[in-house]
Structure formats: C-alpha cells, structure tokens
Length: 399
Image (cartoon, rainbow, N blue to C red; front, side, top):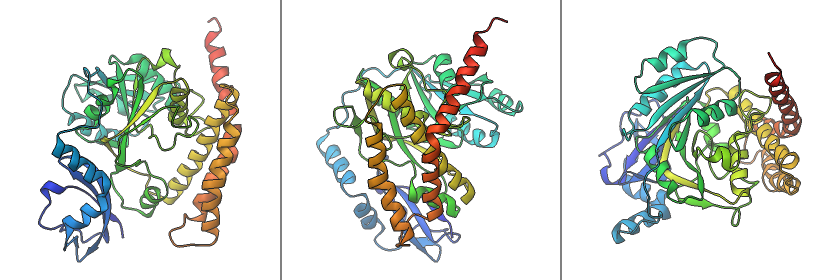
C-alpha cells in the first residue's frame, strides 16, 4: 500500500491522524514553529496513525535538530549569520512539454509572499504552445522560449534573462513551500556564498517506485544548516550538498566561475550532472555553498519502476560525465581517486548487500542501472561535448 505524506508542527498537533484508510504508513515532516526539524515514518492502523504517544514519537524521531532549535529559541539565538539586505530574486522554472506539472508548480509559486520577485518560465525546445499559453494565464509570470534542447542551456538562458541578483531554480514537477524563497535568499548574506540549496521532500509516495526513490536516494539532505567550502569539503564530492530542483545561485556566477556546462544534464547524452558540476567549480574557486533546510520544496518523484531505473541510470551517467569534465577541462587529477572511493565505499557495498539479499538492501536492478550509467558517463560526456562544439561552430558561420 502507498504511504501518506503529512506535514505536522509539534506546537499544533491534531488530536488524531485520521482518514488514512488507503495507506499503511505515513511519512511525516516534523516542524517546530514552522521550521523543519526532522521526519518520521508512522504505521497506519485502521486508517489512523500515531494513535498513542504521537507527540513523544515525533520528538524522539526529530532528535538533536529539534533540541537545538528549541535551545536556540529559548536563548533567543540564531545560528545563521546576521542577514544583510535581501537580494532581489528571479524564480526560474525550466520546463519542457509538461504543462500539467508546470500548472501545479506555478500555483505553488503564486502562494509565495510577494517580495517583488520575478517569476520566469524558460520553455526548452517545446513541441507545442501549451506552456506559453499557461504562462500567459499568470500575470506575474514572464515567458522565455529557448529552442536549443538541454536543461543547462535553459538554466544559462535563465541566468542571462533574469532581472534579480539571485536566480532560484525549481523544477516543473516540484511545489515550493511558501517560505522557500525567503529561506534561500537569507543564505546570501555572505558575499562568498555563490549558491544556496534547500531541503527537498516527496510530494507523494503513492507507488513502489516513488517509495524506492526516497529510500534509495531521494533529495533530502538532513535538517542541519551547513556551509560548504573547499577547506572542509572535497569539491569533487557534492552529492550531499543538494540538487538542482532546489537551488539558488547569484547571477554573477556567470562571470565569477562561468555558466552551467551545456554538455551536461537532461536533454543531452549525459542525462544529469549539471548542478553538481557547478557545485564543484564553485567550491574549487574558493566560494561557499550553504545548505538551508528551511528552504523546503516538495518534489513529485517518478511513478513507475521503469522511470526509477532510468533515473538512477541517468544519475550514474551524470556523475561520471561531470567527473570527466573535471578531469579533462579543469585538470582535476584527483578524479580517479574520488571515483574509486565512491565505488569502494558505496557502490561495491550496495552491490554485495543486494546480491546477498539482505533486508533493506537496494534492489539489484537499481544497483546495476547506476553502475551501467557510471560506465557510460565518460563516453556520454565526450559525445555531448562534440555536439555542443558543432552547434557553436554552426552559429559562428556567417549566414
């Protein structure tokens, strides 16, 4: 049976969690005074979850982040650095032929407090005019058409078109929380911070594939605010920093370190990796990235097992494609060591546990899909880079 997704604040818990007859479990985001502090999975019996000791169960599940937040509130102390003037912002949604997903995303963006932010829809190589018509139905949305396919192409177009100092990216299949943008922008008080990422949670867990994605990967990175720099973190290992579905970057990134690599990510042979490759260059250049869990985004994971398998294959391709770029373009000679470390301490262990069919192990077809993607990654990057170079040469030719 599927898993219900609930959002509960410890200060305003209901008397009971009823009406869950279609579910056998409940995934709960735990908040304290509106701020996320943890998550829990509760059993559902007879359509009810957490019938006894709900508050105590959630407090125990939240653990230290809740205690830390309570202590900060009690002392009147905030761990975040003092906020300077909030930068102006553009919210960018890069989309391609998914009007129904986009409709829900734009509805969520309309619920953000209006702080003067711009909302920009970049329509990437569309097959119809549906996205343009949908954007036009929202008076606050600016529409831009980008005919070259590729997510990183669309992201770069958003950076060039944006009027705000910071561009906050979300995917068309995600729905940002009302406080999402303000939380992201609060992280830019330090001029050395070029990027802020946020906490991404499942919007639904209705299928085995959606539950599998959340169990074996997911976008959540915990409930503790973290600042990353190259002194304390290996720039080549960026999986724990966040994801492109929930990130904001200064528009100045274009001249500080350069644009997204258009040979990477969705719409190219590399399938993914554009966000994490940018994270690598930000850290390697001496700048910082902040992970801010208060910037909550709700993502609709892929619903079928075939889509999940393709997603994990694509992630494998993207990681090794991005590392290939780091090695060949940036001259990062530590790439082989990073790849070996990931295989030895992560993938090899998952493969062994899966082959032994240990409880809770990752299904073998998913493990193998990721490994096949990793093997394909370097070749995919070289093929994709040749395509980008051919396009640039064609553009440079006189008409």
